[in-house]
Image (spheres, rainbow, N blue to C red):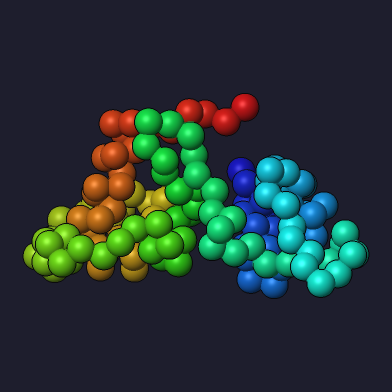
Length: 133
């Protein structure tokens, strides 16, 4: 579990302040090339961009947001729906209980958008991603 936390922190650092190609390779993202536009230094730090989003393979392309799914990563991949917002507003009591069950999502994200979380979580149970080797 400590290794997962360490890699999650390193990935967050790459998203915010940038990281080198060696950092990306260490994270297991060797398929993502650090674009060092304007420099020939292979150790130049670059931030991951929207085009660098990673998905889990399976019947449905689920976003790879790591172990703890943050609001920032969640909304990079999901579009808002008025109907789901309406249902989430009336699901406050079930959300109190449900957000304790779905602890991989940020609590604030889960509580305010519980129907989105249900759709995401049940979709992953119906069409689970292939385990990475």
